[in-house]
Image (cartoon, rainbow, N blue to C red):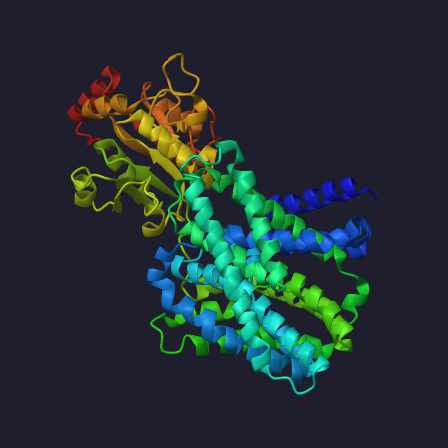
Amino acid sequence: MEQTLVIALVGILGIGAQWVAWRTGLPAIVLMLIAGFLAGPVLGVFDPEHAFGALLEPMVAIGVALILFEGGLSLDFRELRHTGSAVGRLATIGVVLGWLFGALAGIYIAGLAPEVAILFGGILVVTGPTVVIPLLRQSSVKSRPASILKWEAIVNDPTGALCAVIAYEYFRKVAEQPGATLFEVVPPLIIAAIIAGLIGYVAALAIAWSFPRGAVPEYLKVPVLLTTVIGVFVISNLIEHEAGLVAVTVMGVALANMDVTSLRSIHPFKENVAVLLVSGIFIVLSASLSIEDIRYINWPIGLFLLALLFVVRPATILLSLLGSNLPWNERLFLAWIAPRGIVLVAISGLFALRLSDLGYTDGNLLIGLSFAVVVVTIVAHGFTVDFVAKLLKVKGTTRPGMLIVGSTPWTIALAEQMRDMKAPVIVVDASWQRLALARQKGIPFYHGEILNEATEHNLELAPYQNLVAATENEAYNALVCNEFAHEIGRDRVFQLGESADGDDKHALPASLRGRALFESGFGVEDVSERQRQGWVFRKTRLSEEFDFEKMQEKLPDAANMLLLIRDNGTIRFFTHAAKPEPRAGDTILSFSPPQTKTAEEKAAKKASKKQGVQPT
């Protein structure tokens, strides 16, 4: 099969699996593994090794490097205020214990040769951002355990690779010079890792200095950044195998904490690149698996996999966090969640060949065993993360919420309605005085500038899937919507103001604005004036008997429908661009003028009083 066709199929299968996961709620990684396995060894649609040949290994290696760099860019040291102690323990004590327990399980349960078990135990230290981050994205977990898992995955990926390098270099040294000691192997490798880290840090400094000063034009910033990451990775690998993973991780973390404002504009691009790389690499690696690799799996290997799930990981986490201030329910959650991914497979495949060259026949087993670990851990953790999170009470808010920017009487009234309908809501404003009404009404609020980068770390944004910008400044509202569109979704950011298809030639371009609240295009002054006239929010619940048409008959003609909330909490807005289809069970929120009694109603009420009938 032609290489271009293979590349197209990899993209279709990877992104297709991600889309199906989004529609169904199933773990995306599981679906990608299934798609690749079916396309490769089962149906024989394509063979990546045959299609790409010698380029396959460097392609995967560079892809992993870019994924680690992108993950490093998401690590802000301010998160460590709440998780630092746990992350530090897992990156030191946890690595040692995980390596020890994994090696012992390999020797005494799987029956591997001690050398192979020790090397594989080092690789098992990794969990991997390529699987942890999609799991966290799909399952709403509280911020602290989610942050610990994310930090552990990104930090321990290069650490696990270095552990494997140390083990391999020691066994190679012993094969060449019987009687060689660890002291002859470990210090040079640690020095190589330090040098690689310094290379990554210097590269980050160069980017942080050059980008804000205009040394690189805007259209070249992304190409320069990606080329620099690949260059740092390759150069560091020339110093020592797998040291490049350390370099790119350090580079990403350093850049994330240097306050380089120029990087904010490329965040959507680098996230899209990460999604494409994760999808493609998982499809390629699972399609590369052969039936012969699976035949190595037997009962001892099965027991070894169970030991990883129920003994090695729990013992590693619980002993590492012994004496920490982390609650026990969060410790138990961390003890269960440890899916493995791309780095484990890539490094195992590399060292399987090297161990075979040294004469260790069990080395070939690492390829099938690594895939078995990936499949078992992803399936076990991917399908149980929601259940375990609920069981241990570390589940975050699952009902979609609303983030309101700007504290005004109108937004506070809206927030009260959302709170009454059990939807998570918060009002954000930089003025403490404007937030006074929110404090009086008991509405959750955040005092700070929403566009400040620190807000992202001080305010947990995960529960809020919809943003409403309703300050008095239309341009500021548009800026807020434009900033959060890539994170929340362009169709989930809204603002008060002229509708995008209005006739005002001075209106902001639709591409810069959020979707207009209300089909009529009410602005801030419009809703404020109407509120002074007595307009109010009205909630109406639809049923089979009282449908949408009957509701419209009851409402005043001037009423404007704002949104509806379904039984599962899903929020849908009525805008110029989209009109949801109301159905029984929905609650519709409208902004309506005060209802006045018609002449017929007044006459009926007067007649009922004369007859002694009390009005209902």
